[in-house]
Image (cartoon, rainbow, N blue to C red):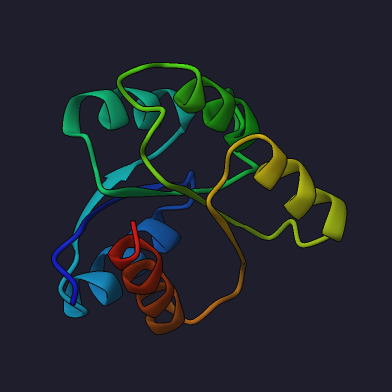
Length: 124
């Protein structure tokens, strides 16, 4: 069952808009941030149930955002799912080793993302 608050951190407006629309249709409340700095601020203030985090962003990249999220008491327990075009095995391993809960390689159907979020968040 949806109803979870999801923060999407991605520098591409089209990606943010698509996920907000499609996950919203699945019953999620979707918050968006356009870069790593905004994502860190939103995570701390909004306390989402999960974060979808792009890796390759200008400024603070997604891996650095992940590290900062996992080292702050206020955000360390929020599940973070990388949502990126980086799909090599070592990228996935690096993200998981640094605290990511899951990994989506773009392009991916937002319905599949919604199903996986419901599955993973429902088991926490």
